Image (cartoon, rainbow, N blue to C red):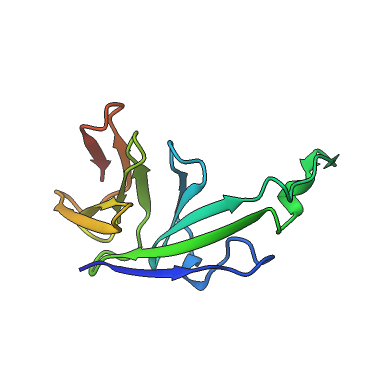
Length: 147
């Protein structure tokens, strides 16, 4: 059974959380530019970002748009995805359609494929010592893990 914990940071704290210590990988969802996965020793922090375009400013100072520095423009909801025995996630990859997130660890021979919509994980046993990196085929039919 997978665990999930939700959290909404108050502005202007940004995308910070105690579960986000020792970050090992960061990946944007290829279909939903407001969905970000961040891995750490605790699991996968799945951030859903909400931007308020009415709060953004059109000025650009020092080459950085003001909305980047304005906490009222963006809020984030974080869900911690965890699975028993699969801690210290270091490799993640989104499926091309953005529906699934594969996760692996160098410490475990179990690889997970999360259905992000339902926050459920399917574990797969792998050969070798664990997973260093993951990649989906362009059609999303195959997932390769490197040990």
